Length: 212
Image (tube, rainbow, N blue to C red; front, side, top):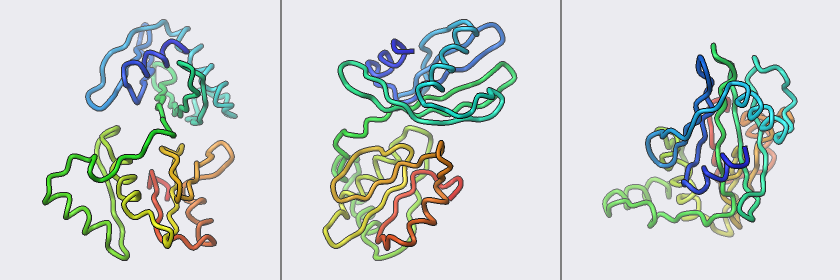
């Protein structure tokens, strides 16, 4: 597991897929583009790796037939790295997705997004509206959170209360109130959003709206 995580970081991957097949299990990486093969392992080794992921995440679900998710940290290349995982039962066994997070990297600004001038101006006009809802959608790992963080960085000011709900927090930013959703403790995006009524935010970022 440690070697796989280190290789993913070295290869600038942001997602690891651990997928059991008929005879063995396939490991694939994604990083800013198409999924690419990493290697194959036996199904027994696959079960061991997933069990270790659950152990690191202190997952309370011991039933491999039930979906489970969690977060864990591992020291790799002299740095403590944050990961999250989600697993689901398939006809060949438990399929798991591990996401790599870098919470202390500098958040991108709007000038880093690669917009043309016309698109940049339209984006600024949109995010500077006094109220409304902005949905940023697209394939996994194609810059949705980077775009949203850039917008929040642009709006970050002492007279604004900005709150983010994430799993886990993408990038630690001064001036934001950042909430890392604890599914293992029974928290969800919906319950966290409900609790925010008492905190009077001006702007809320929700990483995933599936249950909110």
